[in-house]
Image (tube, rainbow, N blue to C red):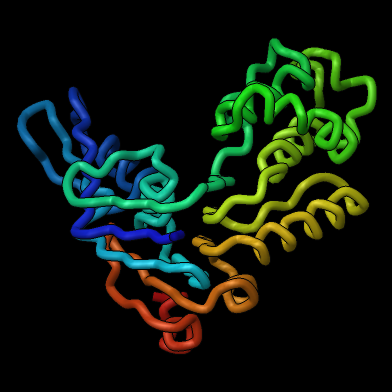
Amino acid sequence: MTSIRLENVHVTYPIYNGRGRSLKTTMFRRVGGSVQAGGRDIINVHALKGIDLQLNAGDRLALIGHNGAGKSTLLRVLSGACEPSDGLAEIQGKVSSLLDLGMGMDPELTGRENIILRGVFLGMTFAQARALVPEIIEFSELGPYVDLPMRTYSSGMMLRLAFGVSTAVRPDIILLDEMISVGDAGFADKAQARMEEMLMQSRILVLASHDPATLKKYCNKAALLREGQIVASGTIEEILNSGSMGQ
């Protein structure tokens, strides 16, 4: 059964040798939450505080809040990339995290080799990743470049390859930090169609975005975050109509 359950989840980052107000401000903006002195050379960044969340199949959750509210940290917890400092995080189902498409790829390896590397990083076996190579090469439109080192690619080519690998397998749970725009107009249309198919087939979606139209299109629930806490939750209409996007 596909589900997400968080109970009283806290994420705290201790920053050592962190002196000065400027560092505190920088860390607050980068990871969200709040900052507290923990000693002469320690700053504790409270990125998430007491998060309770229950999602089941059919739920499409919008994460709403200003930059630094804790949305990205919460997505990292759901992806398994960040362990809670305290509390319970229980994720049932195959997760696809589209938060960092290039993670697990090596610029010195060829595109073909990176398909397998990124596939294994996403949880595939080597056999599964190899089986997907022809389809991903065709989708990414790299042609003969697929056998050149990835460091020779343009940023658009790298993004097409990473997107092709990351969307090759249909997960139970999709995590998104803003909708992804990939490549020129022709490829962007193809990528959008693939993304739409993925979203329709997924059982749970968690999407962080600042665009109300996007949130209304894809989500049926919403959680408003402020300083690392969920301060309001309800249907997407209730949260958006409350004026939360401007708070």
